[in-house]
Length: 131
Image 1: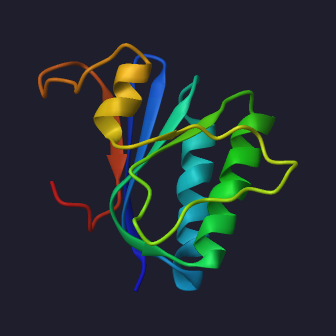
Image 2 (image 1 turned 135 degrees about the vertical axis):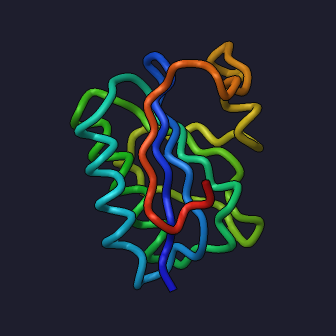
């Protein structure tokens, strides 16, 4: 099983939402999604894990790698709604990764609420992401 993802840019804030199981089989696809994010947009990126069922050690390491890739591009990563089965424990050389209880809290930290559907924004998604 793999993951599905959606990336949305609202002004200078990126939101990468991931659904499914972030395990060893999904790490490459997740890395591709992060590459998509690095190539598009500016500013912080919220990794919304609301629809993520679970993650493996490899999945957690992929998130830490994403934090490094984004930092190298002058951006930073924040997490929203990490799976209940564990917490992300980055190594000492990892950039700071703020963790929010859910997407609404992450958006509030940036003085934003959920975007209305009619607002102008850019979005990309995998074919399997629900419309």
